[in-house]
Amino acid sequence: MNPQRQPSSATRRAFIGSGVLAGAALVACAGPDAPQTTQFNPTSAPSQIRFAWWQQDYKPFWDQIFPKFREKTNINIELEFYASGAVWAEKMTALFVSGDQPDAAHSSSMVDTRYYDAGNIMDITSVLAREKVNIDRDYALMGTEKWCGKTYAMPYFAEPFGIYYNKSMLKKLGLQDPWVSAKGDWTWDQMMSMAKVATQDTDRDGKIDQWGIHWPYTPPGYFGPWAWTFGGNFVDWENAKYAFSSPSSIEAFQRLQTAIFRDHTVMHNDEVTAVTQGIGGGVKTPFQAGQTLFWFRSVTDIPRNRLQIGTNFEWDVLPVPKVDNGKPGVGFQAGHPNWVAKETKKADAATKFVLWLSQSESQDHMADTKFLMPALKSSWPRFVKGTSATEPPEHIQQFADVFKKPHGWHFRHHSTPDADALYGPVIHAVFRAERPLVPGLQELDTTMNQKLVLGQCAPYKGMKVPRSGAP
Image (cartoon, helix red, strand yellow):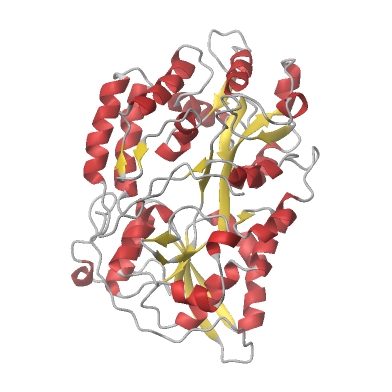
């Protein structure tokens, strides 16, 4: 299989446009009801399935564990790599339209729902019932494994976010570590106060070169805790609409705007870009280069931090801080599940593989290597085991604890990338002081809601986001 081959122009029709695809313009297929079983039978004839993926970091770890699956099943995995984002969306659509889709995929979850509604991805509800798999009880979910009453994707990894912090910088500044002073139960005001002390012109050239916080505010979900923690929201989940210009959303953006412009404690995007380009010779972020005290980022950055920081400084991770005892810090959970193509001619092998990826052998390997955090909750004790001050982060448990408290999700729909593409330019212009905040947020409500596409059901009806913490 050549991942670069293209379907004919006749089959591609108008499905591929410029930029990101239009939301739901896919072929609805009626796939075969192929018999399926997840029981392993290594004596069966050799088989091979195509598995599409987009994250280069995963391959060294897959090379370690995939042979185990081949030994069990006699099924070989042919990897097909496609870049994430718009490239992935365009390529998957072209493959579905041409009938040359992969058998299974590690999804780019911002575009999955359009394929669900178009009938391109297998409904595995009955498979999970037969195998007695309860994803609601046993896994951390990221929001679109289930859609409109059906299950289309298996949870693969959890991606809770936390606040990485530079322990060495904290000590140098004479500030108390929140794990020592408050057992990690710190407040938003404490975070902002420490960030203000950390923000400095260390070389006295008249320019700030050390910041308190690097908090990415694009895509919109990353900004979420600034609103959710204070009881606000920028999405009307019940009616599935963006609500950037709601009063609570405006307050949240003003809060961030003050931190960027008045206090200079939060880096704006241009500063992040300038620092990253100035580092040279690597892929370090401002935090990894030792230029920020705090960094709001994903659990997936643990191995990257270990690689990029090395022994340059001590670091650890904290939860999103609370406002007070009545308003806990609200975290964020992302992630990407795995799915099986409905029209695959190898349904048995593909479903075996996707289920195995979410079962203990694969999930425990993920936990032990810490290249990702398992979605399977029973593997979490292995994931949090063995970290310390010398093998950071010492408080890795806080990532699992995200699910014990309220936490938000991305607002995903058929045209999420198209809508998000409108968000960045407006927000960046606001935070460059090139345009006023409120009119900008009002414009986003208009333009992003015009891009928003959902299918025939109301997938978020009755859903409360942020999600409540697990008991």
